[in-house]
Amino acid sequence: MRSVVIVEDDAALARGLVDNLVFEGLAVRHAATGEEGLDALRDAPADVLLLDLMLPGMNGFDVLRALADGAAKRPRTIVVSARDSEADVDRALDLGAHDYVKKPFGLSELLARVRAQLRELDGDGAPDDHAFADVRISFRRFRLWKGDEEHLLSHLEAGMLRLFVARPDEPLPRAVILREAWGEDAYPSERTVDNFVVKLRRKIEDDPKAPRFLRTVHGLGYRFTPEG
Image (cartoon, rainbow, N blue to C red; front, side, top):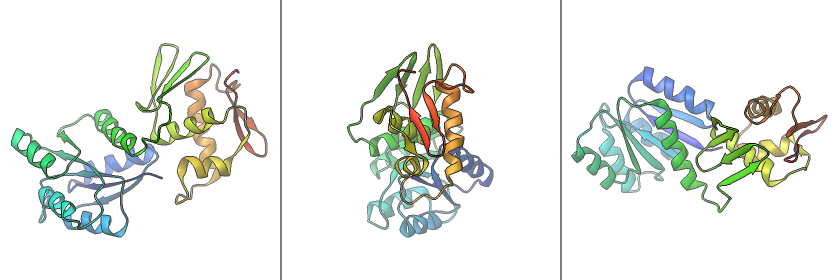
């Protein structure tokens, strides 16, 4: 499972970010200070770091400098800050940040930027696009279209769909789906797979209650049938 560390001293903002990133299917940790953020990254590396600059004690620039000096493994770093001068942006990028988002920000934009960083990590040569029936999927844009209706995909939804389209007409046990989409270090219940299948059916099926494409294999798991 991909992971994110949020370093943000605004507790309410941090709670909202945690909730939305968890909904995206990511493992999320929160630190309120720069020191706590570095400790979290030393304890367990993260894939993406969301980093405020104006922190008590060790500020965000100090965190970037410490990461550049090898204090912890450097994740893909998005600075999220109310400091909006060109000099601040340039300084953060020069210190190793991969992206810069100015507060106040749109939640959908920030989530899209997180997905973009994850795409860089997931650059495994898998096809960007896939289509079946009236459904088109852009894995690298985390988007799906059914006819003219567009849907955003969470990181886990995209991972599940990638697995299904790579193994069409093959019955996939829930345990396999968990292992392939969530990863070896995640421990959700098999019921979690069922919940995500419900979400996917709402996006790809004409009638989610009578699915043509994502079918249940009773007692086992699911089968993706692109021909319907």
